[in-house]
View 1 (cartoon, helix red, strand yellow):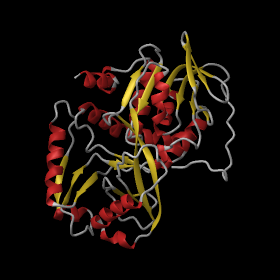
View 2 (view 1 turned 90 degrees about the horizontal axis):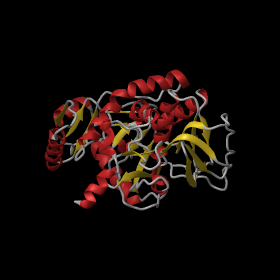
View 3 (view 1 turned 180 degrees about the vertical axis):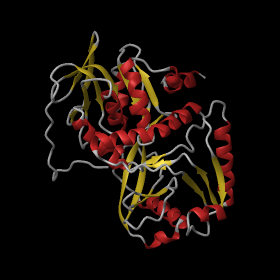
View 4 (view 1 turned 60 degrees about the vertical axis):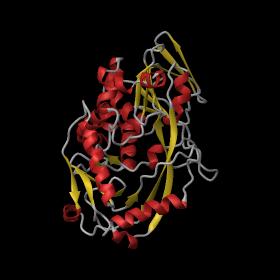
Length: 390
């Protein structure tokens, strides 16, 4: 996560190419907003992205970069189906971005692992995966529990405490920073107006045109998408939308580059395309203390990684960071159109990499059409009202 300091130059707002009313404006230039804007531009002529700048929380820059299916959907099978639809569209998205921008986002979809370090963890994981895929309406995919011998045949050098892992063939990884770069490069190549230093303070609607108030002047659009993460809560209220999101801190350890040793990612340990190692998976209800890393948490992450792959003891840590996930009340995405301001949509989730293809290739066309399809009903905020009434 990056924040501006007094030693960094303040970026100059970019001039707008389009001087009239935009077909659509996306509020938020992270992975969620950028993927949606990219998808909108395939159907609309004039699209703008209004971004706050480096004072924003920038969850996209603290992303682990998994394109992950296993574990998704417990309690809401629709989320499992939505995640799988994105997994299936990821190759198309990566190819489109490479063709338009020349940026390879380093997509690998060769499968993924979730390590277990005790017999108790093994049994708990097997029971979880069985229950997950037994839910009515849950998407089905191949998976199995690997014992220690099977895992060692895939990942040489696993630690003596490792009992095995759950495996699926549908999981994968991408490089999140290259993905963000590719999307923003596509803005320039496809004439999407990217407007930094344009935080939106108010939203008004006059007939079928929205007016977005920013420090750089008003921006008008016929459709708008709130995709500004934790900021969706405040802006949603201006559109009659209650968006219950909260920050959840995650910390990541970055280790120096080595030759490529790990071809299949673990859910908490992966090697990037250029050789850098990432260790992650902390989930802390720490409020808005976004930039603060904590040694006890980092030590726990490092300990589990070394127990999984002891060779990492000889790999040096080069940096660590903390970032804020955007978590809804129940942890699932929120997609909704305002009932009192038609044409205004909200999109929020904590899986900006995994769901990038679904956002660009499936959600964006629905927004262009002016309605969310029936398959999206489970992601409406109405589910929170039902829970409260119950």
